[in-house]
Picture 1 (cartoon, rainbow, N blue to C red):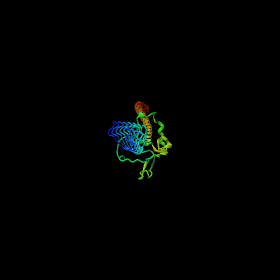
Picture 2 (picture 1 turned 90 degrees about the vertical axis):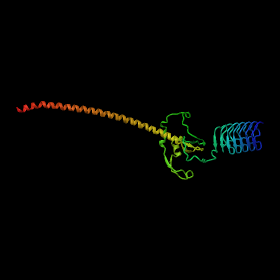
Picture 3 (picture 1 turned 60 degrees about the vertical axis):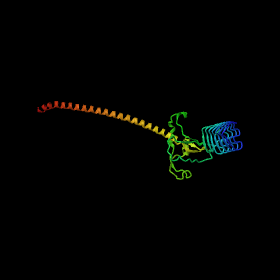
Picture 4 (picture 1 turned 120 degrees about the vertical axis):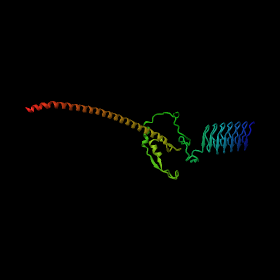
Length: 287
């Protein structure tokens, strides 16, 4: 063969290598079927056993990346880590078997086996960006809002009225969850489910687990906007009524001014009539 810079330790390690270079195989059947793959590191019995042309893979543990054939730039740590990977690239599997054909994916731990996660450097650290969500399968991500991810977009209309039946509560988490017993404010998933099942997220057993507060917030906004539009309509009506009243006052003032003018004219006419009738009465009295 023409391969070079390879290191093989263990029975059948790098047994089939032809032109592959810069590979390290340590353990029984490590990199057993590798032919042209380069820059692979396999540490453990059967690690990267079936790899043929894949390169830049790192497998540490019993049968780690054992089924990988042409996938490259994969990292697997632990017994059977990345066991199911075959042709996918750029995967990181730590304590997880991975998924055949999967690519560009990080998997840490096994769903249903590890039940708690502690990662330093997160709590108390300020960072800007969208909220991170966890799916029922344990996948991390952010909820997309772009229209390119959505179908059947339509106004919420009366669908948000369901939140008016929700019952906010105060509570404390049980001691095994929160030993400090800090007062909490929120909703109870089981109660929310009775109002609208779409507002809850479920666990692996299909039971209500948490409330989709981001959806509740959107519904609250819709209800607020509906009330705001009502207030705006009432405000316009009040403005129209105020304008009508103002116009009515102006008309009344005009009428009052005319009546005052007419009253003044009547008084003048009355005064003239009195002046004309006064001499006649004097003559009559003298006779």
